Structures are given as structure tokens and as C-alpha cells.
Image (cartoon, rainbow over all chains, first blue to last red; front, side, top):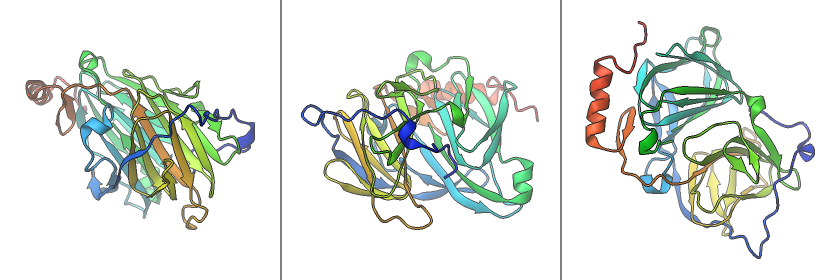
Length: 147
Length: 169
């Protein structure tokens, strides 16, 4: 996956090995399989949190994985303008490119390994679309939309 | 993520977090790469700024690799398999692409990648989320997540009358 990789993993700081006498490895409460669906203008998603109680997810409420999808020219899809209030959405692009614009004049382009973190708070309208060149050319796309 | 009641109506904010801004960590043998996007892992903070305490990590485990990730005991722990196959926890429960593991209480998240991965997804990629539960009532409809039905009705009313802003179209 094109999300950032490290050329020399051993040069990185290492995560501390927990003391097995003191640390408890978290057991599994549940494992669920995400059903597939379509979102926005029709891009394929896996609905990761479907069937899981909100109390188990709290403070998270929603997670969609988009793709991996290989779009032909003309196919890449996004969302129409839509509102949000009262929570935060996080879009993590693993592979691909998205443009976003919002009703407060903000916007930008996020690509491989980038994260767009939007606090909707009191309210915002936004739109997320693949850039024109990607629509024209087609291409691969994988990302995660978490709220 | 949800916002606690006190922060539901804060001013909207964007954070564009570039790929190069995440904190990178590795397992002791180098077989797992951890990208800390928000919160912190083992004292290493990620760039995302949050209203309620959470951690978000994208981990890539090479075939056969295993990692124990210290995780705040007061956080919940959710492990979603983006691609690949492996197992979680001491009881080695299998998990593969498109599956979510909700973990119970403890100090450590254990994840391992199967030795054999298919050629299309050569490693196990997981998205790990956890946070301090907010513990408030959730009134959720479509794009609005509030605490009460009355607040939801107000959100729809504000949207219809243009108080959430306009698209400029």
C-alpha cells in the first residue's frame, strides 16, 4: 500500500515490549464482518461497524472502508454537498487522491497517506470528489472514513 | 468520532495531516510498522488534535510478524483489518480483510500476521482505534450526531434554513 512506508524499519523508535508479568493482553469481545454497500455517488464501501453496539465503539461511531477499487476512466466517484453537525470525520487516504471543499471556504487535496480531519462541530457543508485528472484517467483508490 | 456534549457546537475546524507528519514506530524485530495518526502510542504522539482523548494507528505487519502495542487501559480498542490475514489477542482469533475485532479490557493489543498472505495483499494492514468512552446518550440521524431528539430536529431546521452555510452553488 502506498501509505507512508519506512525504508529502514529498524532505524525507527521501537515500541516498548510490555512486561508479560504485569501486562494483560486484551481478549476478543467480538469479531464481525463488514457488509458491503454503496456510498455517495456510488462508490463501494465496507461498513466496518455494522452490527456492533454503539457502547462498544464509543467514542467512535462510524467507519467505512472505500475500495480498494480500480476505476476506469470516467468512473471515479465522490459525494454531493452534504452537511454534518455534532461529530468529527476523519478521512485517511491509503492509495488515491481526493479533493474537498467546505462551506467555510476551506478545502484542499489529500493523497497517499494523508489524513483530512474535519471537526463538524456546530455545522458545516462539504463535498469530497476525485480530482478531474483522476476521473479522466481512472485509477486505484483505497481509503478509510471514520467518524 | 463523536463529540462530547460540551463540544457539540464548537466552531468547525479542518486539520490536513500530511503522510510525512505521522509518527512512525516499529516492533522490536522490525516486522511491524506503526503509523500514529492521532493520540499517542507508548509515549509517541501523532499529529491529529482531538476533543476527547483517542488514539488512531495504521499498522502494517509483514507475513509472520507479531506486535504487542501498549494501549491505555481506560481506552476501548478496535482493530479493523484493511487487508490481509492474521490473528488478534492471546487466544489467536483469526481476522481477515473487512473484519473488525472489538477487544476487551487490558493493557496491550496483540496482532499477528499469517505467514501466508495472498499475492494481492502481501502484508496485514490494520486500522486501530481507541478512546475514552464519552458515555452520553447518542441521537443520530444521517449526517447529524447529537445527544437528544430535540437537538437533531434543531440540526435539520438549521440545515434547511441555511444556517450550516451554503455550497455556493
